[in-house]
Length: 619
Image (cartoon, rainbow, N blue to C red; front, side):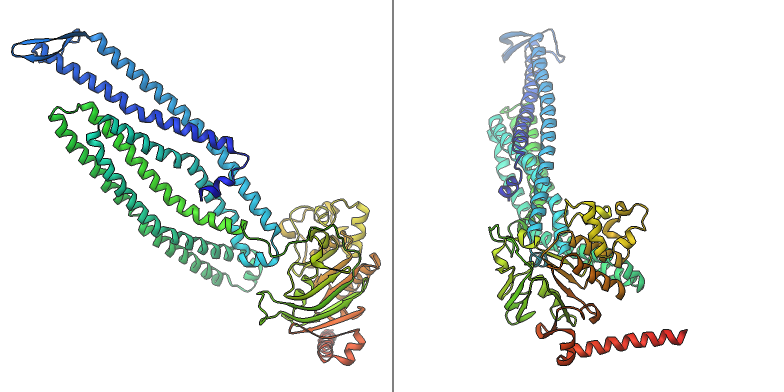
C-alpha cells in the first residue's frame, strides 16, 4: 500500500523527504526533554538531601551546601555553592526552552511541506484516474458504473490523500517516537523499562485484532456508498420525470433504504471501533500503575531518584501515545486502503479496446460488416448481434429500423469501436477498424448518440468540440445544415448564448440540432444519427436530412429512426429483428418483401390518420 501511495507523489519527492526529516528531528527533540527534566529534579533532590545531612537542620540554606554522608557525628565531603545548583537549573532550563522552540519550528515546517506534498499527491491521482477513465471503452465504464467512478474520483481520493499525509508525517513520527523513547527509557532506567516490553505487544495485538475485523466492513461500506451515490445521481438527472409522475415519496423511500444499508454497515464497523478506547485505557493505566509500584519501591530502596521516575513516566506517556497513534493511523489506513484498492482497480484496469500504433486514416465512408457477432457480456450464448453481413458504399445514406432491444445502437457503435466484435470483422474505409489508431478512426466518424449531451458554456464553445479550429463560416454552415440557425438567430447573444449545465436553456429538439451541427463540424467520412431527430417535427427532420446530403455528398450517413418517414428516402434500409438482419432494401422493396417493415409502416400511417381525423373532428 505504501509503495502505491508514494508512487503517486512524483514531482513532490523533495517536500515528502523534507517532511520526514523535520518530523524525525522534531521527535528527537521531544524525547530529550524528559532527560533534561530528570537531571534538574535529581540535582535538586540531591542538593536538598545533602544540605540536610551536612547541616543537621530542617530548613534549606541556599547560600552553601556540602555533598557528604553521615559518619557518626561528623560530616565529610566537598562543599558546593548554591550558584552551581542555579547554573544546573538555568542550563537545563535554557536547553528545554530551546528544544521546545526548535521542535515547534520543525513541526510547523513539517506541516507546511506535508500539506504541499499531500495536495500534489491528490492532484497526481486525480489526473491519473481521470486520464485512465478517458481511455476506457464503453464496456470498461459499464463494468465500474458511472456512480462508482464518481465516488472513486472524489471520496476515495480524499481518503488516499489523508493516508499519504499520515504516512509521511504520522506514520514516521509515531514509530520514531516509540523507538527513541524506548531507547531513552532503557538508558535512563533498564530496571523499569521491561514494563514497556509487556505493554507494547498487548496494545498492538488488541489494535491489530480490531483493525482486521474492521477492514472488510469498510470495504463493504464504500460499495454501499456507490449505490447511494448512484441513486442521488439518477434522481437529479431525472428530477423532472420524478416530479411529473409524483414519485418523490418513492424515490425518497429508495434513498432511505440505501442510507439504512450504509448505517447498518457503519454500525457494524463502529461496534469494533469503540473497543479501541477501553483497550487503550486498560493498557495505559495498567502500565502507569506498574511504573508507580516498581518506581516507588526503587525510590524507597535508594536505587533511583524521583527525577528518574518522572522521566520514566514521561517516556511511558510518549511510548504509549505513539502506540495509540500507530493504532489510530492503522485504522485510518484500513479505510484508506479500501479506497486505494478501489482507485488502483481503475488505474490497473487495461482498456478493453486499444488502437493500433498506425498513421492510417479513414480514406472514405465505405463500411463492411463481415459475419459480425457481438455480445455485451462476451458470451457466445447471449449474442446481441448475430451473423451481421452488410456492405455500405461510401456516400450512401442508410436507414436502420427495428424494435427496442433489436441491436440498432449496438450495430453502429461497432463502427467507431466503442465496443469490439466477438466474432467477424468491421471494415471501414477498406481496413479493419482494429488497424486504425482510435484517434484516427474516430476522427473519420461522427456520431450523435441517443442521449444528446451538451456542456456548460456557450453555443459556440459546444460547437467547437467538433472542430476547435472551425471558422465562423464553417460554424454557420453546419448549423444551417442541422437547422440550428433557425433558433440561434432568435437568441439575443446568438452563438455566445450560455447553455447552462447540460444545455438546460434549450429544448430537446434544439439540443438535438446543436449536437448534429457539432458532429458535422468534424467533416467526417461517416455520419451516424442514432435516433437523433426524434425530438423534432417531421418537416424539420426532412430539412436536416436534405441539409446533410447537401453539405457533403461523399459522406456516408447512417440514420437510426423509429419513424419510417425518417428513413424512407435512404439508399437502403436495414431491418433488424432480435439482433439479426431481417431484410435490406429500399422503401419500395421492403414494402413488398418485408412483413415487419410493412407492419411498422401501416401502424404509423394509421396513427397519423387517426391523429388527423381527431383534429378534424375537433375543428
